[in-house]
Length: 239
Image (cartoon, rainbow, N blue to C red):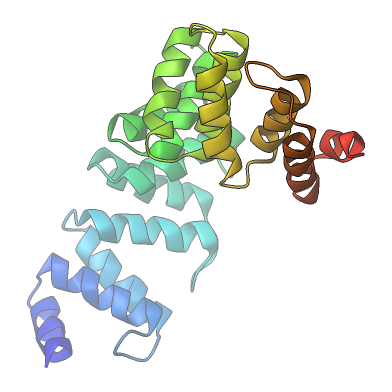
């Protein structure tokens, strides 16, 4: 019944129904998978500025899903969706411009879209912006306190890379007041999410007794976990 309603509504020009129908054909959800039909309905919806349809067309062009791979077309539809507020489209564009993937590398556009996604609360983008300020990128000059602000936003959403970076900053007093207690806290949160660098630095803290009692067994535990996850220096440190 719902499929029939969606089909009728889509034929009458409802862009949301057209998008939903495109999704059903794309993923074989209630209808037999048909990427040509999917593309056709997404395109109809996109002509009416349906944001999710524009993003979906971007994806189909990006991956060559049922059509020839075309990064410039992907850029076109991702941009339309991004300008309407699609965080996923903003992230895809930012990555394409950062890596020069199918488009000319463009630092300004990459920063613009990562910052836009970060301001909308996306933890991956927040961590990325933090890295831009930590290392400097394009026209963004190194600003460690600004880096820490963005890492904290991402870390509060359990981004393990941001948690590691905050641990490192507190460990070394970079951009924040040095605090082994805070370093330990962020390293541990990151390490428990299998971040190999965080596991490695936790091991060092316990081995050297930095702000904690020396604990060789605890140190070796973290070295082993880090080594098992591929950290070469950790492997060398195992007794």
